[in-house]
Amino acid sequence: MTSELDIFVGNTTLIDEDMYRLWLDGYLVTNAVALRVRSGILEQMGSTAAVLQSDTMDRYRTFHMLERLLHAPPKLLHQLIFQILPSRQALLIERYYAFDEAFVREVLGKKLSKGTKKDLDDISTITGITLKSCRRQL
Image 1 (cartoon, one colour):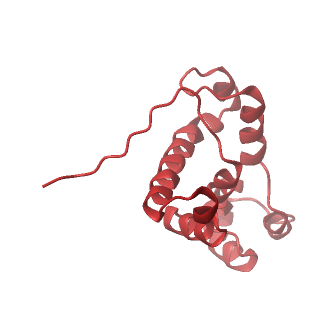
Image 2 (cartoon, rainbow, N blue to C red):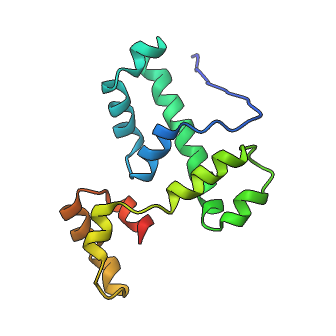
């Protein structure tokens, strides 16, 4: 029985802005892969769907590890685990804390309370923004 293992070793953390946007928007890996395939990335890169799936999963793992640092931006700026250019760090922070217009329109004027968190399902449905993205923005 043989098994296949993909390993990537790198020094600098590469941030793909399009992938980061998909992750922030709350897309699952499978949905993100499907969107990337439809965009024609396989033909552009001359790659396979399996490699694209692996790459997407790897980037999502990185974003997930970065998320705890994004909760406290000064930690991201002074951490030594991920080697990210200062301009990229600023981009990560800026986009993480950015609001979708549709979400803001729905929430603006409402009294924020514990009930607001329960209303996120409705807000997600009305705005077409994923529930995960709504939670992040709240």
